[in-house]
Image (cartoon, rainbow, N blue to C red):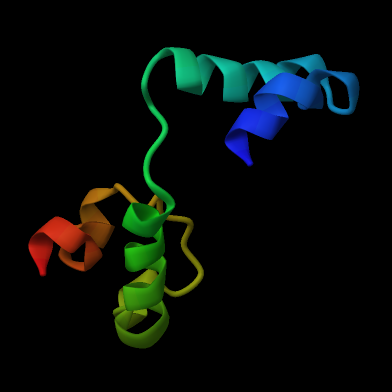
Length: 71
C-alpha cells in the first residue's frame, strides 16, 4: 500500500500528505505492519486505564510493553 501511495497518490491527495509518505520512505522510517499491529492488538486487550482517551504512537514509551521485542 505504501508503494502505491508513493507512486500514484500524488494525483489524488494533497501534496503535503503525499510528501509525508515519500519522505518517510526516503528516510527509512517505514516499519513492518506487524510491528505496529502487535502493539495495537496488545492495547486492544490489555491497555491500562490511564491511556483511555489519549493519543499514543505505537513506538511511544507508553506502548513499549506491547512491542514485539518486549514480549
